[in-house]
Amino acid sequence: MSDIPALEALKQALRRLPGVGPKSAQRMAFHLLERDREGARRIAQALSEAVERVIRCRRCNNFSESELCDICSSPRRDGSLLCIVESPSDLISLDQSGVYNGLYFVLMGRLSPLDGIGPEDIGIPRLEALLDEGGVKEVVLATNLTVEGEATAHYIGELVRQRNIKATRIAYGVPIGGELEYTDRMTLARALSGRREA
Amino acid sequence: MSDIPALEALKQALRRLPGVGPKSAQRMAFHLLERDREGARRIAQALSEAVERVIRCRRCNNFSESELCDICSSPRRDGSLLCIVESPSDLISLDQSGVYNGLYFVLMGRLSPLDGIGPEDIGIPRLEALLDEGGVKEVVLATNLTVEGEATAHYIGELVRQRNIKATRIAYGVPIGGELEYTDRMTLARALSGRREA
Image 1 (cartoon, each protein chain N blue to C red):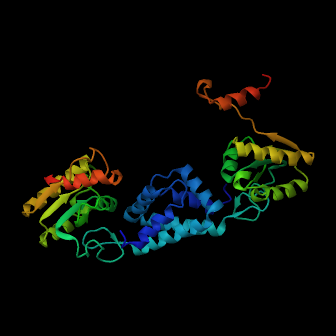
Image 2 (image 1 turned 45 degrees about the horizontal axis):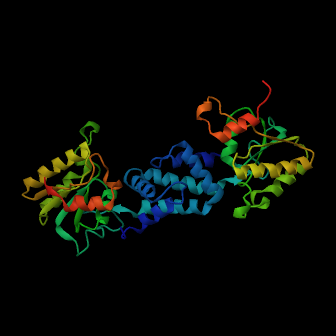
Image 3 (image 1 turned 90 degrees about the horizontal axis):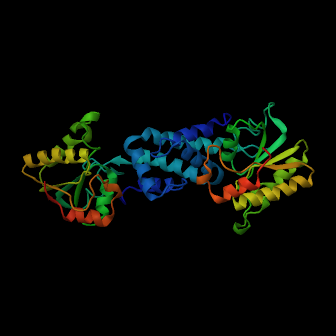
């Protein structure tokens, strides 16, 4: 197939998608070229537009197309509650549970000293600045129930209590080692309403 | 997340990839936007270039960037042998076996009367024109061993024999290294009825 460099380049590029190996990349490339060239054009356009338009909210760090995201700028949200999550997908999952009406702060990952990922790398200074603005009365720690997620929650919990703000941790039902993104809504609702002081 | 139309559009677009549902599409979109924007740009560019440059070889119907693909224009290939496959990926797999040195013809799928897919839809008229040019002495039928693949092989076999050209079918049986105990009944039946003198 050495005569088709554009096809080879497409297969290579598609392997940058998470969970896509050589076989899947080939299947995707062939599918699009054989049966869905319009789809290929749409994906290309959607990728270019998303890369260009999607930025991070300057307050909560979630994806947004405006400087301040819809959640942060909503007058119906309770600004005294701040929920800390590891990623935008965790935010979506929690928010869809419908139980929580406060604001969020999206970390850029979790603390992982072994990988050299410290507080600065995940945006802790920004979180501290946000807490120092005042107004937040309770911080809900909703990092994943993994070793690193727990350590991150513990670290942030200390920072929160130092400021005389209440720190709580979600609980009940989220299985140990489980990832929030793949937990069902009911379980997430239980975890939110059953939160305890950390 | 209604405030991020470019992100929603990206998730929708990614679902056009085969085997990608809503969860995978979200994971892919978030991964690219959070950690690999350069990858997103590359995929977009590779898709656009592939859609623009990759055409089908006018002789064998395989993907190509020139009117006649490398295989069809190679002087080292045996033009008296023509192998019929259902798709470009089947062509790659067969050609990588290194045993076959003839030419190919790539069908656009397989006959499926129930879905309204007839001979014209899979390129049979082009195949007949190719056979009528003369020069082909043996047609190797390498469609898949499914009901529709078999029907397609049978249909093409008739057309080939009408032109006094030899039609052969690739052998189906127990795969190399396969254990009889774990081989399905249909395959064993084929292996038995297709037995040869040892």
